Image (cartoon, rainbow, N blue to C red):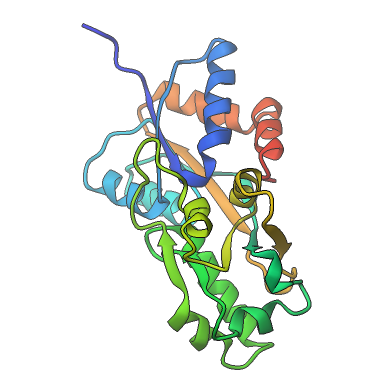
Length: 240
């Protein structure tokens, strides 16, 4: 009988970096992990419903903490961070200074991820709340008009990332996303601009990772993600 590989499930935003970490870990003598990626909230629900995993890496510590409290995973570690930014068509001339005015304009189609199922959506709505303090009415306006184009389902194998197809299919003028996703989108569509959200409005995300209580391979992999080789890989892909 073939040996079953240990399994890691992880936030979709980690896909490229995590695949490289898995390869590096295996090259240094660690187990050969299989991996599955998707919205962290949906992955948490699958684990709560009985899915067996060795490691869960979430874009929000809320999910790893909840699973640890239910004894479905062991204690979690914060192993990296991410920030929001705006990827935008150049003709909008968006900057940090005019960001709230431009995103508020009725003609500007703003795309986001989906709250609850995907932490990137949750962080985006927190950004809307933060912006409300400077721009009265911003939250209600963006809450109503934001187009939730990612985070509800996992893209099929070989399918374009939703951040890229949103612009290619002319469904968005601006997309609020992680800095790491922006690097991938910019590489695919170099004409787009990437604009950082001002620090006083931005939402810094804590990524949590935890192993199954009884998985030695999972616990060893979690330890590896905290070490310099894995941390350097994460930084190379825009995390930090």
